[in-house]
Amino acid sequence: MEHSTFKKWSAEFIGTFWLTFGGCGSAVLAAAFPELGIGFAGVALAFGLTVVTGAYALGPISGGHFNPAVSVGLVVGGRFKASQLPGYVIAQVLGAIVAAGVLYLIATGKPGADIGGFATNGYGEHSPGKFNMVAALITEVVLTAIFLIVILGATAKRAAAGFGGLAIGLCLTLIHLISIPVTNTSVNPARSTGPALFGPSYAVSELWLFWVAPIAGAVIGALIYNALLKDE
Image 1 (tube, rainbow, N blue to C red):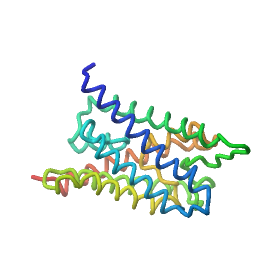
Image 2 (cartoon, rainbow, N blue to C red; image 1 turned 30 degrees about the vertical axis):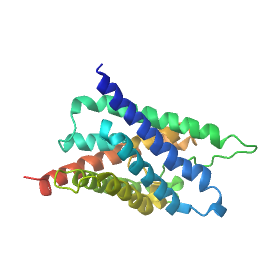
Image 3 (tube, rainbow, N blue to C red; image 1 turned 90 degrees about the vertical axis):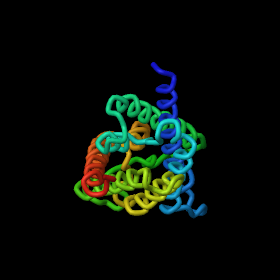
């Protein structure tokens, strides 16, 4: 294994750890206390901030994907080698699982602790707004497609240098503001997998949607960008 490859995997592990721990941690630890007043908006901002900070700190090492769907979309978009995809996805999923494990230890570290939904994703009865499976599927596909279009556009050669991480982080914040009521927002299979392994049992049974829909959306977004927006 090349030393540079291990550094890339490490950056993806740490970045996905931070995204999961920071974003889901804000929901599990802070949003559980209404007096703190962060609500959905605070959780959405927390997810966006993890991407902004992670992109600038770790992006120069690995590209700052922190999301298997993003990695797949970048392969389709011609920005990432398919041969590197398995290592990235494994690192991302492991980062999310470790983050969820650490968060679980913290969240259960008080008498009478109740982790509730543990920031897991769901549909139907397990959707925050009780939206059905079709609504959840459409939401995750459409928003991940837009996310990929923003990522590809913000990191294109013609884009303003140095602002890609900010645009991507703000996009993820907006995505959460839209979709927390529908699915509790995934657009990231790794982020969904980590909490599902420590949360309520239904989360694992519904996890399939939060792999299939984000990856399908990422592929669609990359194809749209290449067909309509890509530099000649």
